[in-house]
Image 1 (cartoon, rainbow, N blue to C red):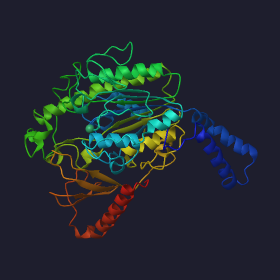
Image 2 (spheres, rainbow, N blue to C red):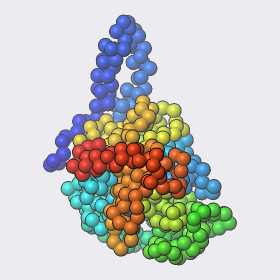
Image 3 (spheres, rainbow, N blue to C red):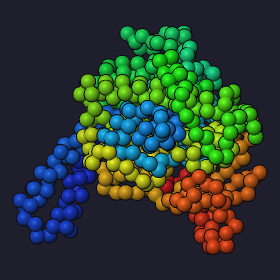
Image 4 (tube, rainbow, N blue to C red):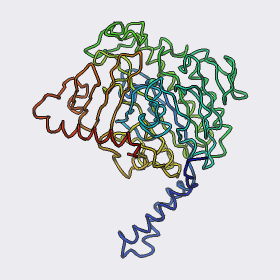
Length: 485
Ligand SMILES: [Ca+2]
């Protein structure tokens, strides 16, 4: 594997712990008797045992799933008992974001741990450069069996992805796939519609079910060794089509639009490009049913892990690739730097290691934190080129926060008329700058979470604004220079 520093094998966590304990013994317990240290080690022994055994990894990614479109986030009617279960048994990151709210750039960031400025997939037309290194390569080197199953959707064709044993994907509809009738590509070989990539797997034709079926079969095949599975759904992307079983279930649910929206917004203000040919409320019900149909399939993955006795030692992460504006700011779709567009669901479960299940963490975490998190949780070194942060300390509960401010960037994506924009997001404020078309905006995201009151000209905010502009410039320079973090 040229160009990749050889990562250490397993047991790094355990040996690092021994070093830490040695330091603690010298500094924190100078007069502690030997039995005292032994007691301390005994208390930590379950953790040490787990650290020596690499976890299985299951990452489930969905498309365009808003952070609040889940039961656990208080959605009024979407049924997501399985996502809720992951939150109950794990950690819910309630302030999770993407650094560019669009399918392709976001997906490349999940895989590489980098900002779009570094991995090069800046919009849906700039190609994936296969010299990019994904977390799969390090896992493979460490002995994992690996699979990528589902939506790839990055420009430049389907690559031969290094570090991935089984690559089941599609290029149908420009990589979007369809809810019904998507032919798969299996390790580069194009299959016919309905033809299964794996033996003894019967396909129903509905893509969320089929991808799940393939994932279940692959997990079973690989149950006896550390495995890493990336399960990437087409749902809930347009045309937001639920399975037949879920279709119509929410027909009578009342949908409350944002105050600035109306039923026919999809036909106004350039929003027609997003192909929502129904009243907004009807399309939102489709979206909700598609989400519930996906949740049901995620439940099958949870059940399978239980049945195989793998749930305890499996690091399971669920995330969305970007948010979705449902009429907020009179906008539809993603791309914009507003909260509804950049927030994502991000849930982590790892029973063998995780303390206090059911926790919520409010640190700002990013899509590019996935790769370093997976590597650290697998006991591997995080490469210096990865710009994300490992969330392991937040998952372990040994730290509460990994960053104070971060950069959002949307690059132009012809023919969509959304202007290039750069934002600096802190726990308290967001500064958005536009390349054209709009003036800069400053929002207090605590007192004004819907970003209705632009503070950019407020005299009292000018000193803070200058600090934010300086921080934005400094962070951009760091990101663009390729420096980590
Ligand atoms: Ca998307």
